[in-house]
Length: 226
Length: 309
Image (tube, rainbow over all chains, first blue to last red; front, side, top):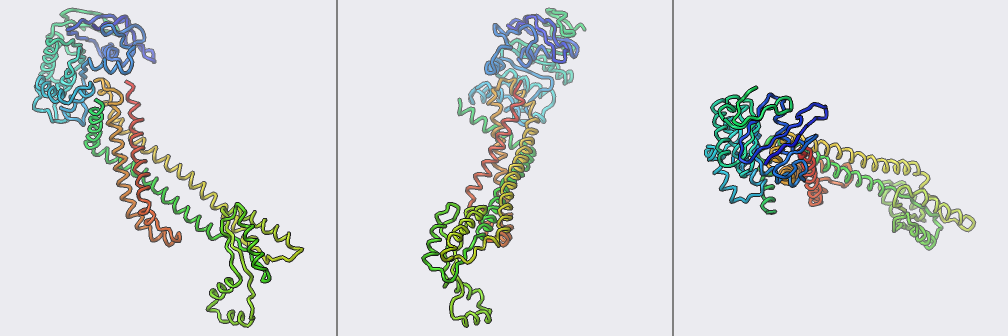
């Protein structure tokens, strides 16, 4: 489903972010990517989202080369992917409902669908009561749940979670990981990057370990070993 | 789908305008400065133009004829002058009687002069032609034309007593220069002021959008199209422009009212308040149009930078 074929990324200042990375992610997999800061995790995700283009090699989604997508097809491709960030990236002047509705509007969904799906997806992340609150009125854990709700509302094929628990306390971390697991159980591919040993060890799913832009380990049911 | 999208974009634009209250307010204030400059440029160009027109109106050359000159010859001269392309038609003919009438009127409190005139028995004053040029710089050639007529008629009998252009030459030339440089200076100054204030507005809006750059990147990552991302900023920019235009127009009301009397006295007859009221439709269109255009175009351009994700 997702295939990195010998991908390298060298920035203009000749720092190497990725070096000959190859791996494949199958549908419905839950893959964690671990590594120190600067190991290349975020570059890897940006490559997949089309925010960066590879200096060498190709990134495929099914049979499409992502770096060759036109602007319009890139927009359509991105609607198949839900992204969750460490810093939540909610739109501050929109309330919870509108933050989620926005992603649906962008995908061209009708008003009726939006009115039906937004409350439903907020119930899934247990935030039904905060539907009219603005982001600054929410706790970190709640914000992250809104951002997950936004990511899943268009029923994407893949969820990318870039250190989603980085700013959260252990209890909220546990909640977020449970939600991601539930999403995976419902049939969505999940790619998670994290520093959190406890999260990785409790998941017992596939782990890619990165170091200096390379993948040094690829373990099914892996553990955090850095 | 198009209408649903358009509706969503306009609604999002209104919401972002309303919820970013402080930012919206400051953008409006900055934009008001720009529109105020544009408005003042309109008013000052009107004042300048009317002043120049007034001055032009006052400049003319007079041909004084000898008392023996026949009306027929004078009218013939008037006709040939009127055929010159530089001359404003009609050239005004003032007959000897009218000249005398005007002279008496001017000196009606001067018993001594009136008495002397009466004692004289006959009218000592010659008829005159008053000539206005379309442009002050053309007086010279008109004067030359009259001079040539006079030269031709030297052998026969000369009917022209004198032409007052040569007395007024310096004044006319100086005035011509002033009018020309006032016009070009006004033009350059206008361009300069408008350019500066448009740039300031553009930068303010860029700052506003800079604060929204994360928002824009999120919009990109959920797969929103460029147009869908730009739309609300475009609408909000247009709202800034529209509101600042309305406020500026309201501010111009008391300002012109206050300046109206003063300008009417100083610039002989031109009352900026009356001008404002009489031409309100046109001024409204110019100010509102500029406001909306500057606001929406600045937003459109400013967002472009953050769309390259």
